Image (cartoon, rainbow, N blue to C red; front, side, top):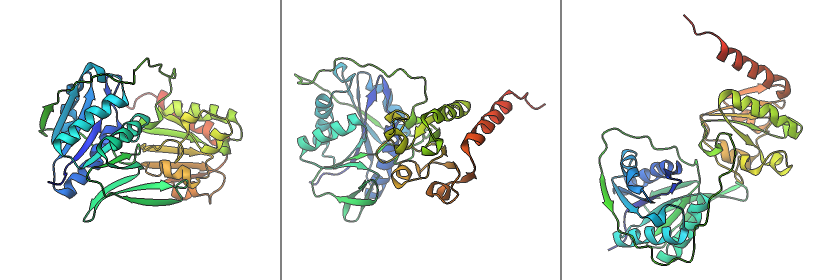
Length: 331
């Protein structure tokens, strides 16, 4: 019997479900509906069972729970053993994995263990009459290639923010299956985790982002960007050009070679809109562009284009925001 069924891999981190899981559920739901099959998910961790109801509410019909203390922290060797066991036992055909560093490491091990085809960094994954297809950008997003699978098991890592997050639906029901797991000896050991000390909003999870580009003039221009972002509770983003120039750390870079984002509001300040940057943020809800060049690509795709000197405009915008926040409520 041929393999069938789609599985979403739900990874946990520091006792929380990764937000990218909800994006995978949106992708997996579309594939499962096209195949006329139920959608399954597997969640791993020391206390993984607590996440099963949320996964069902957001689209999964069946959730495999692999709960073991050895899975509290990510270990690609043990996680691959656990996920691979579920895929092999259930005869699943398609596996969707987060396109994070951990997810890519896990997917590579799964591919070898299951003799499965693997498409990494997919921006779209869909099923048609000829099988599963994965689209992925190449050459800085200048071309998009379509990957076809020939293996019985097919694995894709899906880029962050490629899909909207699945919303919880009240009243959805599904099946939870506890999966026994014996880790056995492992060649990899988790030693420690040192979180980055920062009070800034996480870029990949932000609903609002204010990004700066070379139009800021100097690295000092990011003081304006940070003040603007703080005034509206936004994360700070940046173009590749300013990151390469050393004006701001790489963790802020938005684009094909940085982070893909999908906020409700994206404000691009002094960013011309090169194709690799647009590839990482063009799915944003409302795009506001502030630039002196009215004909640059970013201004053309923006929902709202503001032509002017950002060094003059941003202080005025921030002052107005602060004024409105401090204004007394209307009677």
